[in-house]
Length: 403
Length: 224
Ligand SMILES: Nc1ncnc2c1ncn2[C@@H]1O[C@H](COP(=O)(O)OP(=O)(O)O)[C@@H](O)[C@H]1O
Ligand SMILES: [Mg+2]
View 1 (spheres, chains in turn cyan, blue):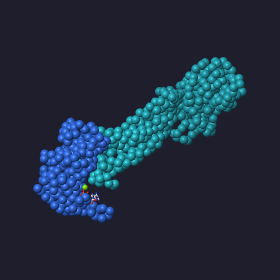
View 2 (cartoon, rainbow over the protein chains, first blue to last red):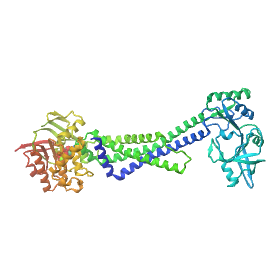
View 3 (tube, each protein chain N blue to C red):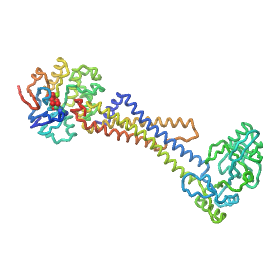
View 4 (tube, each protein chain N blue to C red):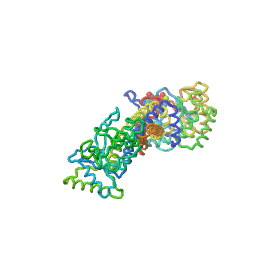
C-alpha cells in the first residue's frame, strides 16, 4: 500500500476507536510532556547557576584560606584553616599586577538590634571596593567609605530585607543601630537582589573591615575577592597569587582559588548530567506508554483477525500487513509527541510566568530526545503485534479460528 | 489456465490426520463455469483456497497459467492473488468501518493504484453490481444481497481472470441468492473463469461443468 493510503486507512481506524486512540495518545502525551517539563527544571537550574555566576562577572577570583584537596565539585565554602589569611595577605594580593580591585572579607554572625527589634544576621566586614567587585548596587545612600580598610568607622550598609524588617518603609539613613556591642550609623541600603553564591545578600549587614575586626575580635579573613584585569591570563594571575601566598606563608600556598570559569564549568557538568538523568527517568513513562501500545495492539490484532485474513486474501503480503500495524503505532507516537511537546512547552511557559526569576527552559535536545524515544517505543512495542498479524494464516483468520 | 496434479493436503484435527484433499487432479480452461458440490467437510473450501493461493498443498503440483506455484514466496503468491484472483466468501467479509466505496477500493490500494484510477474503477464496478447509489453507505446499512454484491464488486475491481466463490448464496434468501448468481454468471459470460462452491442443486445445475467431492476426492466431473 502507498504511504498516503496507509495513513488514510489507519486514520480511519484510529477515528473509529476514539476511546482507545484517546487513551494511547494521552499516555504518550504525558510521557513526552514529562520529559520536556523535567528536563526544563534541570536546564533551568543550570541556567540559574550560570546567571548567578555571570552576575559576579567572569573576572572574579576568590581566595579562600585553607586548601581543599577536592577537584571539581561544588566550591568549598568553608575550608579548614591551618593558617589564617590576613588583611596584610589581602593587601599584598591586591598589589599584584593583573589585579584591578580587591576586597578582603571578614564574616561572622552579629546580633543586630534597633529599638525593640533584634536579630542575628551575617555581618561582613570589607572595604569600599567590595560593592563594585560584587556588582552590588544601592537603593539608598552610599557604600562604605573609601578608608574602610584602614579606619574602623561606625557605619553600616544593610541588605534590603534586613532594612525592611528594622525600619519598614521609613528612611534608615543616618539612623543608629547596634551590632553586637557596637553602634553603627546606617549609610546605605542594598538594592533588592536574591541569593548569590550561597549568601543571601538581602539579610546582611556590611561594615568596614576594621570595624569587623574589632567586632569579631579576629584578624582572620573569611575570603578575599580579587578582580582580575581582563587582558591578563587567569592562569598567570593564579600562579602569582600562589607565589605571593607561599612567600608570605613560609613556603605553603595554603589557599584555595576559585574562579568563576572553573566553578561554572563544574556546575555545568553536574547539572547537565542531572538533567540527562531526569530525562531518563521521565522517559520511563514513555516505555510504559509503549507497553500500553503493545498490549492494545495485541488486542487489536486478535479483534481484527478476520480483517487481516481478508486483506491477505485480497493480495496484501505479510510485509504490507506488518507495515500497517507498525504505521498505526507510529502515527499515534507522532501525534502524541506533538501534543506532548505542546503541552510540555505550555506548562513551562506558564511556570515561567508564575516564577519569572527561575529561568525554566527545555534544553534543545529535550524535544528531540522525547520524540525519538516515543517513536522508538512505538516501533519497538508494535513490532511483536505487527509480526503476529503478518504471520496470520488468512484461511484460518477468516474462519475466525483461534490461533 | 489451471492445472492441479496429485494435490494432497492433510490437516491435523484433534491430533488425528485428516485428508482434506486426496490426490486431486484437475485442469481448468480460461472462461469455464464450474460448480463444486459435495457434503460438508468434503474439502471444497480447501480446494478453492488452494486454487486461490491462500493455502499450500503438502504434495502435488499447481500450475497457474503455466507457472509452477509451489516454490513461490508469500510475497509472490500475494502478488499473484492480487493480479489474477478474486474471492467471494459466504460471510461477505466486508470491513464494517469502511463505506462500500472504500471496501471495494481495498484491492486497488493494495495494488498501489492511483487515486484517479481507483475512482474510475470503483465507480464502474459499483454501477455494474447496481449499487452506485449506496457507494457512501456502511455495510450495516445494506441488505445481505447488497453486501454480497459489494463483495463481488471488490473481487472484480482489478478484473481478475479467475473468480472463486465459496457458497456465496449461503447466507442469502432465495431471491437475492438468485440475483448474486446471475451477476456472477454475467461476469463469466464476459470471460471470467468462475469456480462456484454451493450446496444448492438448483444452482449447481446451471453450471456447464460440475464437480462432486467426497472425502477430499473429486468423485465426478461432468460437462454438459
Ligand atoms: N485449517 C484447518 N485445520 C484443520 N482442519 C481443517 C482446516 N481447514 C479445513 N479443515 C478440515 O478439512 C476438512 C475439509 O474442510 P473444507 O475444505 O472446509 O470442507 P468443505 O468446504 O467442503 O465443507 C474438514 O474436515 C475440515 O474440518
Ligand atoms: Mg466450506
